[in-house]
Image (cartoon, rainbow, N blue to C red; front, side):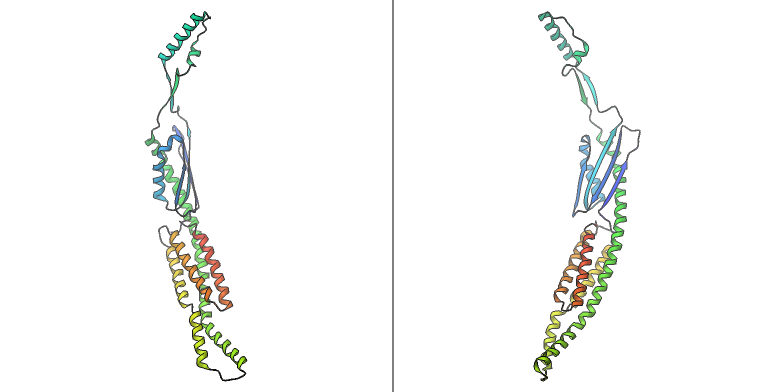
Length: 293
């Protein structure tokens, strides 16, 4: 199954709980699986677990994950009163007032504002409980991404198959032209010799030898056979139910290699034009393959 690496997924939790989580994921093409996770500070301990969940579902792509939340609870910090310290502050202020004979204006609110009398004690979040809440959301977002990858992948597959058919048509034309190239070369040699020798007898054996040498150098039958094989392998790979991006990329490289070899042996303008057309189609396929998982 062909899957694109360009995708997006989103999921949001239900109202009525202490936290309302929302998850957004997006991915683009990448040679390997590169996961970037942005989440609230109190959830940092869950990053590795989140990464494991994503690793099980995706094999390639640059994936950005954004986890946001709203808190509807009482918060995770509670005030703590240090009575002993408050008493010490009061005694110190009272002593200062008596010593300096200054009117006592000590109030409760003033003492409460003094350092460390009232502090906030942060309570640790229940990480396991939070993981239990976000795991279903992660899977929903991943399902959305997977559906989009499949839809985009099918479109890529259809277009690549059309291009493969066009390449195959051009290869068939090259195959036909290649059979005529030695014959055309022989005719040109004979005509040239007649022009230069003014009607003298032509050594047919020497001409035949020259044509045989040329035909051997210009032969592209092996390259054409391998190119047909690569086209068939590409079609088979497109139907595999597994990540195929790297396999397709390798096949495209081999197709390009054989096409370049055919082009280097071309001695016919029509064949050269066909090779240019094939190379253009292969390059377009290569760009599409870069986005397949």
